Length: 95
Length: 229
Image 1: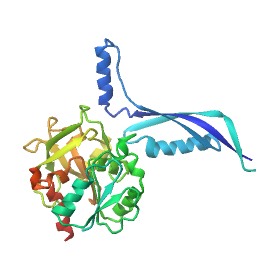
Image 2: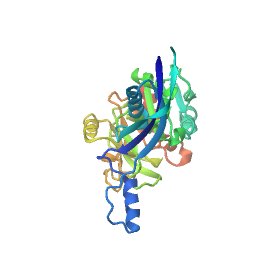
Image 3: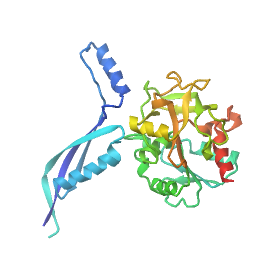
Image 4: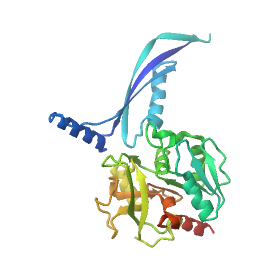
């Protein structure tokens, strides 16, 4: 019997360290105007959530890697990482 | 020559481009909806400016997976002509047809202006009507036109003379002050190694009709026509 497992993925896309982040710099300046002169290295990234069903956690991770490499992140300028958690209900398919 | 102008949801320079190729240059031109896959009849495919798919996620990121872009990859691989203008340049980098990426402008503003750019190559069919190192005026209108690639890629681009136009001052000096968006090495437009695929942030199609006051962009299209005549 094949069991399809549902997972919840939290995907973090961040600028590569070598890439300048003018928006982060602007936000840092805003924080500084608020009085927080103790803030450094503000970097703005993206956070993406999705649910995915797959035969195994490894299969889900493999698919997520492809999604991130090809669409969700642009690896010329961005890095990504994701966290995967199994959702409780499982659905049995086939015999 | 048969021109095709891709239309994505959110394209907004598609008709400007068709006006140039069809009306000013008298070339057969058709609009190519992004879901089309058969573009075998076309010699030139232009990916126009605009905000394809609302610029969601990243500029050009979603357009890259549209059916017409798969056909455009084959079109480019066959050595046929591809031009990406503004959002089209972003799409070409996302599609991997050109190296690097376009990022948020250095000063965070959307910049709508006329800029000087220096012609870095005249041996390309696209550029043969210009003089070497000629300074021309083209309009720009973008929020994410800051060209970025890692140092190794930039060195390779420069070594292979793939930089086609560069932001400069009136005298042709590629100064920081003349760089409207923070692009590495003042890069405004590049080509692939073969030279059949060109992408640029400035809008040559908006500088082609004499009625609009300046025509420095028209030579780009005339050059290609002359080459293929």
